[in-house]
Image (cartoon, rainbow, N blue to C red; front, side, top):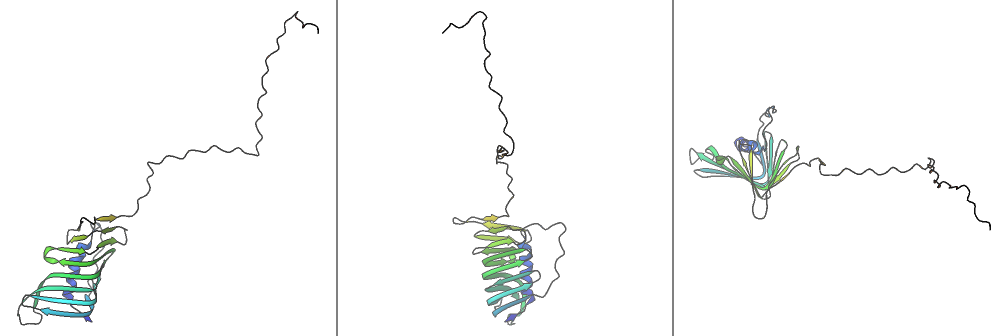
Length: 221
């Protein structure tokens, strides 16, 4: 079933896109991608309204395709505040209270990828909470962040990773080059003698000079 509602998908894009970026943009950043229609696809969809809120529930495999972003999960629940005629089916959707994606959550945006078991968006607090084994990585630069809980702050380009007694935040970076400052230089081995070269002749051993004393002859035998 395809449930099209541009305001729902557009909200996902507006909230997640700035918060998902973990690093400052380059001074000569590329122009923003042109907006495209937002489509939410799911195996089943349901909408329930009260006098104050409208709850959109998408299940059985959900995919949100929006400008410069793709979000997939098992289930998606969007709660919007409403005003206007309480008897109206839709009413006037003023703003969104929360957006909860659960089950195999995966968010792709440019070279950033986030995976987790649960992603909660709170527009009133300008933050996104990733829990249940969250991982944020850069497919281009090779870094990866993990931790029990991640909080992405919208518009601040700031991510907070919270640890607990059983798990600590972890950042994995690309390998550094071996600087080698603490290694000793290998000792030079003596050169082997060339078997074809003639052996050097040793100087003759010196003999003590003979001592001759005039007038002295050995006795006859």
